[in-house]
Length: 219
Image 1: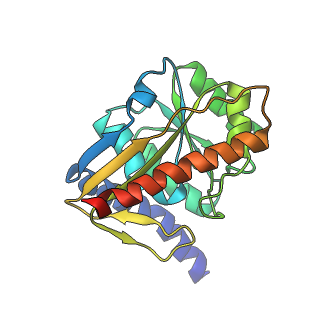
Image 2: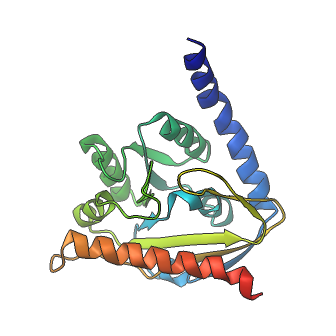
């Protein structure tokens, strides 16, 4: 009974606290953006993909720097997914509940309907519980079903704390410098298998993540 109460309190209290931390951290962060034309040159909706441990400033940048909120995010139906859902709802984003491995028919329908309205999409391909930095097949299937290009995104910051979680979550600290990289768009076509595209997306995400990780070490 006590355990259930604590879990409910976590779901109720964590979202506004995390949102406030995200907002204050993001507002005091100086961004360097690389490859933004990979996104800007595309006419119409795209699906952003980023690792679970790089959620924090990815959603902040879209909402408060680009000043956009027309995006539908695939969020896990788990309790942790409920926390994320409440945070993203506070940002004004639309949500589809499902995982990057087992998305439901309703989640796919919700995403397709939002894309038809001109919304972008966002999927965490190694969520909700890993393996870390390994792309699951769901994102490729959604991309194939919708025909939308995938845009890999990664960031790192000069000041941060890496948490002891399954994904080694990167928590940016206030008054940091940040580098955010948009990778080359990846469009799924009929002449290549899901596994080939899954591997290609994973390699692209790992490549730009490595670039962000090395960015401040060379400065």
